[in-house]
Amino acid sequence: MKGLLFASVASLIMFASPVSIHCQNDSIVDDIKTIDGDVVSVNSQNSQIVVKASEVMIFSVPSSAKIVNTDGFGIRLSDVSVGNYVTVDYIDDKSGNYVMKGMEVEYNR
Image (cartoon, rainbow, N blue to C red):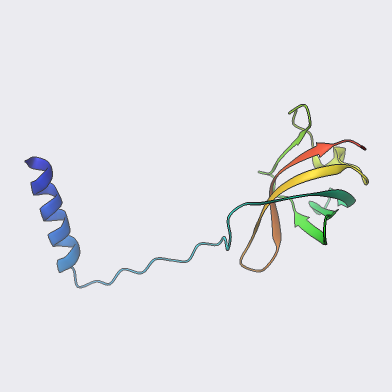
């Protein structure tokens, strides 16, 4: 009974309010995507990595990105080498950049 009363009052307040409510757009365009490919270059100082899959993609690597080896142990971007085969989880941000969320590194196959 109290729940029904609370829901009725809440909906009355919400619909009676003269203030319009607008939702702000998310900064993420799409959900997390995944690609597999070979590392073309690594720039630890600028936190970027270039991977060649079906196309060449440049990823920015935020400090929150989780980078692991195939055993699941965390490694740093500086531990990744050209020629490593990687699986990258990433998002497209609003400006069209690829932002890495995580990466699994398989050392030279």
